[in-house]
Length: 473
Image (cartoon, rainbow, N blue to C red; front, side, top):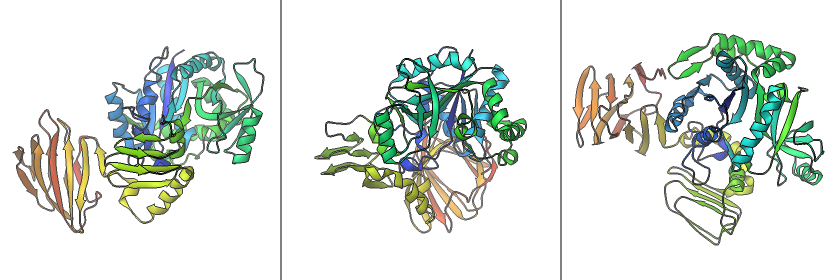
């Protein structure tokens, strides 16, 4: 029986702010040591050698659809589909939608449910565990993968198992939500508890039957949403109005904690759910003083620190239990043991409408990217990079004029129906209220400086008339 990976990629990752932000969450960043691949790309690549593996189904937020498509293209993967969630409803509806998509091609298959933000260092063990679980999955079981804990951890859920040392496959006695520290220490002492990794293996028919038993109302509602799906370029859109009616519930609460068919396969250490800077530090390679040092960082006399620079040079001296993360627009400094507090603080700061909370200065678009360089009350300077053959939408602004200066490549500029070809060191003015479009007709990346001036300079001052990527916002 074939294996269809379902990769859940809908999280916002605010606990890893400022590297992870809602416009560009952690799963699309290369944060695993010195790996050049994003967490999503690593998730896809680590299973590509499984026998009878199919192309993955990826479930993501609509805002991130072009990021997912581009990152799959970079590693030469064509997903079976990229399903867009119109609104986040937790894991149960997302998995159901993906299972319905898998059923169209496979009728019955093993569904391997993976999160896109895990780090797994012991890949061979992980793949062997999946192969071992396939037989049980095909016999109607829901296979969980539990990690043997090496420390008391309050950020993970636990699975209590029978303590028969002769059984490779463990029976589940109880599920425990994230415990306090005293309980977590007790679990380590008793030795018959596993971390719940959130990785599952089951067949399409099994999960459908279990939803009929324990969450039939949700199953029917998701079916209504999926019935009215629309194919949009590389993406599959379910019906928004129907999907919004779905209960927001995890697969654990809806099915796993109720079913009589669940079993668990233990995994030795080598797995980490990258929930915050502390867990990332724990899973990272460290020096003799237990420091992770990444990027342009000079470290001296530091202990138990996570030190990371994305752009500028950072000097760290005499620190202990400290996280220092530098980006080109934000610097985070704090006690690494308080990393769980970052999500609360970020949510609090959102009320102040700080642009750094949700977006990086470098913003990716399907046609390329732009980076905010300087700004004032009525002006802003950006560096715009357009991929070869790509085109921005035909658009207009109500509140700003723009001036473009080409610094690399060739620009095809359309203003009110008149097209002009610009080379390096040439410029053009786009008056307020004119319909305009920018294209890159060349084979090299186009780079230009955009100078905006006007009373209102935010990105929502865009009226789109035509867009080759199907965007209407």
